[in-house]
Length: 598
Image 1 (cartoon, rainbow, N blue to C red):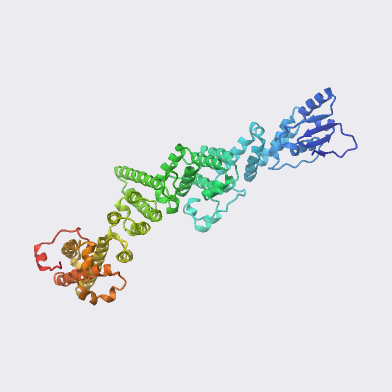
Image 2 (image 1 turned 90 degrees about the vertical axis):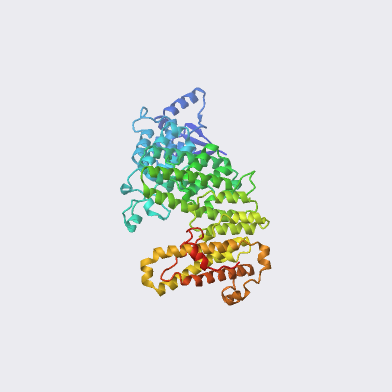
């Protein structure tokens, strides 16, 4: 259905112009005086004895033509950021230039663009958005390029000089990442952050966003961290949180293009800029939607430099066919291996430069973070029934021993794996438990391990043994400190070392005598029953198997402690030195005075 537009006038209209589905009844004189193209079209219509002109390809449609017609009639025309591009393209189509009349519509729109639109932050973004529906006119008239340059220039302005309004809904969770250091908290909140512009930019279509960001980066005045924050904000806005959302949209190609665009916009310095959480999110989606190998490899390289910033949840990347596991364990192992290679290279480089502080803080501190992350990741994937023992062990061994000052997290992962894989053979259970050093378990975890029926018997023996070493060392140290505080203050180091050497070698020999098979423990279940009854009140929480082992160790340590009390008068023992194999024997004389239980 065609609608009509009239001009209120006593004179009859003499030309009909069809723009889309709208018919305009106009007068020749006002419109021909300002439009060179209409003059040509009317002349052609007269030659064909027609009073109608068809302009089906008119840029901006009927609304844009109405603006031009009103201007020709001298009516008031209201221009704003939403219609100015359409009006400019329409005026260009109608050839409303200065050659026809001074102060024509093209001139007036250009003045409005330069004096108002391009000076406004938000209007520049709105205008840029409207240009897409008016291609190629808006591109040929350089409106797109001028908008991009206006936006990019404003992002580089010193925040202290910004007077225009902008959108900023994110919390200043880490103020020093956004504003300069050395400013008080109140001043940080009141000042303009360096990434003030990133949210408004999220309104742009991905193609326009890419062009603006390339222009921002080309100016060389934007910090890589701010670029990373901008890309993160855009990704959060447009990338779905779950794979189900991507499937339901049915537009995986759109997300593939978006991920590839964001990857190409990442800061050139791979070690700074984007947070690791964003990189891993991009990698997850890249794998799911089938992004090309080059962008994926770029993401892997960047993540391997910042793995210490990741979280366990970030690393839970779903496995793709033909993998049978829930998560892509091989990819995580690759990331860890690359990270450790990078760390070794960085440390070697720092040693050459005599930068010891870097080695101490970066090289060790970050590796500890990675150790915690991987132990947490192992605990999560241990629930997967399809996770092989080899994959679990390989990933666990991919981080150095120095990355695990305690083995509590590793114990939790092993315990979870044993629980979810009850069909493991005895040899397999021993193999996975060999990853764990019971000397590095905290007291609470050791207590849990001593009661854990899933652990091999020998591991429980080791746990109980080292718990008693710690307990006896603590009690003996307290007695010695009370008995002779002055001697402890002056001779502590030498006497602790001597005592630890004697005790450790003695306990080591006793440990070797406890290498008994499960069947032998069952046959000798009543061994040391008398001593067990004396300590019954402290053993109620242990299973029968652990209690029998505990009773045997208690007698060993107690007897040894009494025999050593006269030898170590005036000295104190250190709990941390009571580890078998750490010190050498103190001599045959002390061994002759000891008695053992076989």
